[in-house]
Image 1 (tube, rainbow, N blue to C red):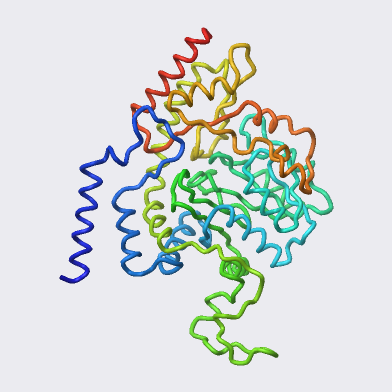
Image 2: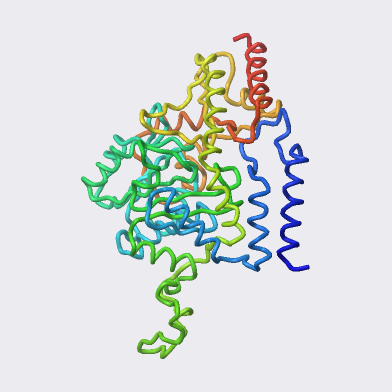
Length: 426
C-alpha cells in the first residue's frame, strides 16, 4: 500500500474524529476563555502533510504563507518569523541596517500597550518615548505625538490596540510633515480595516503576531510587511543569521569572492549580524488554512461583540467601552471594559467575580508601560502625565469574544453580570 492510500485513510479518520466528537475540541460551557485554538481537521491535515513530506523547518509552506499574507494585507512583501515580538525586533533592526535610524534615536510609542512594543526598541539601543492614548479609542493620540517630536525623533510605532484601528490619516500626515518613519504594530489587528484598506498597509513597515489567542494562529509566529524591496532583503537576511538573501545565493554555490573569501559557498556568507527567528513549515501549514478562515472568524467575533455590547450598555453607568472610529472595522482580539469610578465596586472585585464564575479576564496589556518595574529603570522619555494610560492601568480589563464561544457562553456572561449587579444592588 503506497503512502497516498495511507494519507487518504488518515484524512478520512481525522475528519470523522472532528465531526463525531466535537465536544472534545469545544470550549466547555460556562468557561468563557480569551484564547482557544479555533481549528479543525483542515489545519491538522495541512500540518500532517508537512510532517510526512519531511518539511519541518522553514520551507515551501512558509513561502506560500508569506505570499498569502502579503496579498491579504495589500503589501508587496511579507516575511514570516517565529513571533510578533521577533517581528517588531526585525522591523526596527532593518531600519538600523538601512541607516534610517541609529542607536540613541527616539521612537514614539503609546504608553498603553504590550511590553513587546518597547522591549525591541531598548534591545537595539533606541529610546522609547511614551505618549498618552486617546480618551475614547484608547489608541495612540496624534495630538500627543506632535508634542513628543524632538531633534532625535526618527519613528512612530503605532499600535492598533485589540484590533481597533488608530487614526492613521492624522498620524501619517504628521509623519510626512516631520519626515518620520511609521511602523504599524498589528499584532492583535488581523483583518481590521480603515475604509477599504487593511491595517498594516499604511506604514513603511508593519508587524503581526499569530499567537494562540489571536484572531488566527500558527501556535507561535509573526510576520513583517513592507513595500520596500531593500527592507525585504534585509529582513530575510536578519531572519536567518545575517546570511546573504536567498535570491542572491540561489544557483550560485561557490561563487562568492572578495579580498579574503575565494569561490566561497554563497549560502554561508554572513553579511550582517542577524538572528535565528525563522517560522517553521509546521507553523505555516496552520497559517495557510487559518488565513483562509480569517474573515469568517472575525465575523463570528463581531457577532459575539454585538451581544456583549448590548449587555454592557445596560450598565453604562458603571462601564466604558472603546469608541470605534467611523469608516473603520475593529477586529476585536478582546472585548475591553473600563470600570468607571463608583461607590459600588472596584475593578478587582468585578474581575474576581467573573473569574470565580468561569469568565477569564486580563489587564489592558501592561497598563502604562513606563510604570512597569523594568521599564522604569531603562532609558525612556514620557510626554506629560499620561492620565488616560494610568487610568486604563488602574481600571481597565478585557474578556473574551473568541469565535469558538457559543450561545451558551454568551448567556452565561449575561447571567453572571446580572447576578453581580443584583448582589451589589446597583
